[in-house]
Image 1 (cartoon, one colour):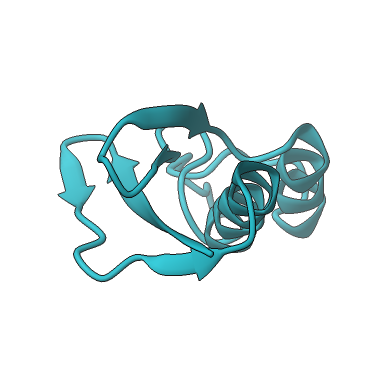
Image 2: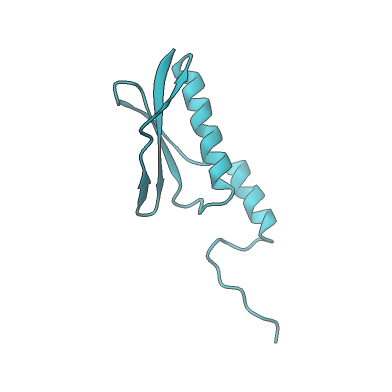
Length: 91
């Protein structure tokens, strides 16, 4: 088992994973990173969310974005509106 770290980025925000989590291999860690991006991405701004995956030597393995399917799911839940778009009252 090897420890991997998953840092999160939104716009100017950066959350550093100081603890990490053990995975059997790099593929398992990358899959976990995609799950993080998709889960958090449901509630976050898809345009700016990124998950950076590092190995135990703190070498960057990948920068992961939420999957396209989650982006479409979010748009459907919002009725086609974009996050941050203003709502207008009916006249």
